[in-house]
Length: 229
Image 1 (cartoon, rainbow, N blue to C red):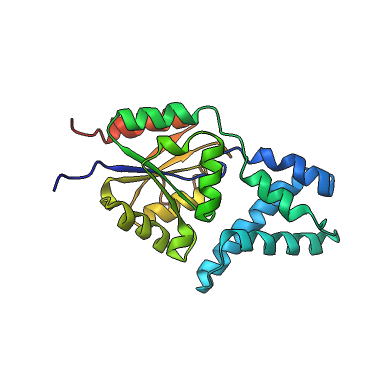
Image 2 (image 1 turned 90 degrees about the vertical axis):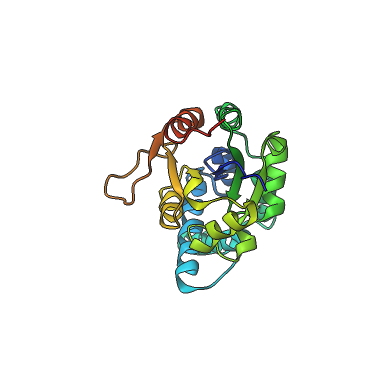
């Protein structure tokens, strides 16, 4: 049986898609887009706490829990229609403009390209179809199927099993430090996109690639690990 090409896995929220697309929903409900960043950080923090405790809840449920806790902490009421508006906005987030070129470079260089997201599979598919990226990918994976969200090790192991990829030949590309650290701890190679800031020098293990854009990351991956023709 022929050997499968190596694999690049991409994170979705903030890595491929611009979460600022949610700002109008939070502004309309709470008067400030700052709520969006506070909510998403609270969601990630709660997801990691659940993972550390061995408890599993899907990312949507975790997000609702985080929002309720944040609203209570700030003495705010969550509008009755907010959950529906937020769900619709999450599925129609805009694509970062550099993404198609980066995906094309990786595929032209011989890599399989997929996503590994924390959102449930139906949400991820809707997101990717909305921005026209779904058909450009070889595989679309949700950590929900591993019953452990990233950066839990089972999420990355699930992706390797599903794709038949070899761990040492598989890259994780993300704009989140925690995602890269989790992937590298699981044996994958890491490429960090500095969409949210530069890599903190006190965070280890450090990624092999640090880049401002996906095409820049793609070129670095192809330089470090070219696929034999």
